[in-house]
Image 1: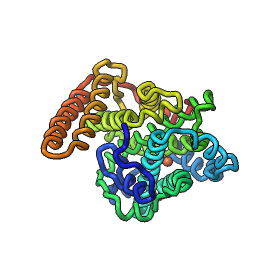
Image 2: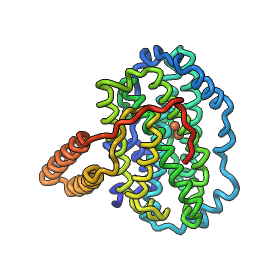
Image 3: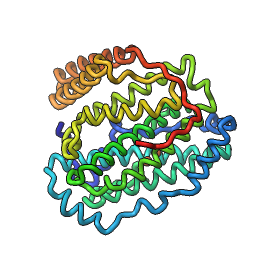
Image 4: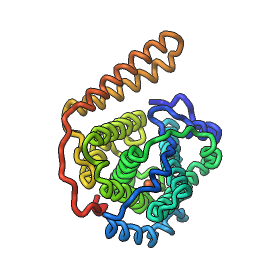
Length: 358
Ligand SMILES: [Fe+2]
Ligand SMILES: [Fe+2]
């Protein structure tokens, strides 16, 4: 779907990053006192090993461009259509906003806690996300669309989440981020002619950072097992569905991006869901039944609802407003139906940590 706001200036790029619609990445804040009281001592051996990996910082020299970068942008990316260029710019802005969202949250927790385990972890993760955000911003700057991150930090709205919601949501977004990046990287490794921008060459080592960030939240949750049972399982189901559904709708709103890479959006998304379902066995006692026909129909309907909402919004006026209300209700009913579909029960893995083997 064509974006209503063509991104052709730094001002419009910043406006896009500020967007706080349902589908756009958000900034979060949380309860720092509760974060300070976290205890990971029951996972000490795995935790210390992970901290040594952060300390080793094997990606410290990864986020530098090579000489070939500019050549590929000039020779390959300049060939894409104007619509495709818009979708890619939107992809960069939404990825940058997600990376920077992690950077801000982790950095705020770092500054507001004394607990040495949590403080150290947050410092490392903020370091990584800051590199990721800056690296994407460089690619926006190539087109004169660099985003002022200090300004974004000051002006974008923040959503408050209790620590446990931060754990479920952030764990998932780190792991799904890994699954998205590795799926693209592996595919373009086999089809280099489809690599229309050099940034994808960085994805393999990049997504190992995201994988490790996810591992950190897995250890925090496994060290606090009450987060993973009883009534909390209903929250886990909610976050799984919210994260999967948002990704599905957002990706289907950018079909050209996947097509240009030689993917079909649904096939790509289900591959990412499959990998994420596999990984989340380390921490969640349930997974969504992504192969259930009602699940697949429900997601397809949510995307259809989004297209209708966009049309109604473009139409405007009272009629547009009424139609938006009607489609919002249809979307909400579909979400509830999806929520109550049967889920798959699973045993948690021992040890907790797994290797990024995809
Ligand atoms: Fe990141
Ligand atoms: Fe991350």
